[in-house]
Image (tube, rainbow, N blue to C red; front, side, top):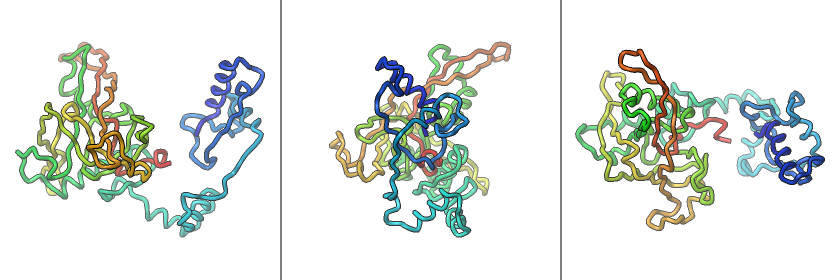
Length: 330
């Protein structure tokens, strides 16, 4: 999914490093790997498109060797799916192919399975399905005792991002807090409300420890939420169901959570003992590495003065994965 401009930038940088400007890539041999059938680059032009004006297409045309792999390991034990994918790649799906794929489609208007990960077209559908999965679970297993702070028996909890505004603390009123917590996860790289169910799928959104398989896009399963001494669990209304009854959920601020205990979903890593001998094999703790920030506009009480302030957001670098987008699934 690298674009034409990325190819040009790599070429220029290698020429600078090697101080050889008359040879492509500074005279180095370049190997490009990938699937030409995959989605094109985001906000860019594919290097193989002649409409590119950055010079990337010209570099691409000068590549002098191509190796095509003709065996699909992904569908080695499922030839029917392999043939279906080939027909879609050639833009020649049959009616049976369309029916088979549509039977697998789950949208935000349907009740998704709690323990499964489905692929949806975009981030709006992903967010809606993840939210619906959490609400479905909370409604299916209602909180019987509102004064109880024992969240683990029910198996679900909402981790609310901890917010601060060092340069202008009084700006962080309830209105500003609600605004920041409801911002889209893709805009601030964190969830304002991280809804967790023990056993639910999670996906990391940041490189944590690549050498141990903890990278952006790593799929995992939630095993436990470890609280610290600052944790204050409260019971909050989540939504009102079709019968007009409020559905409640346990809530805790991210600053009150020491770590999330996750289990690798990938077989390669799920059987590996990490540097945490006290945890089961394949498990690892996820801690908040650092805060992120966003800029918001705040107004004085009489709305006569406005100013931009930076709000710091402390939240775990993971999101629920009841649904993921097609881009992430690749």
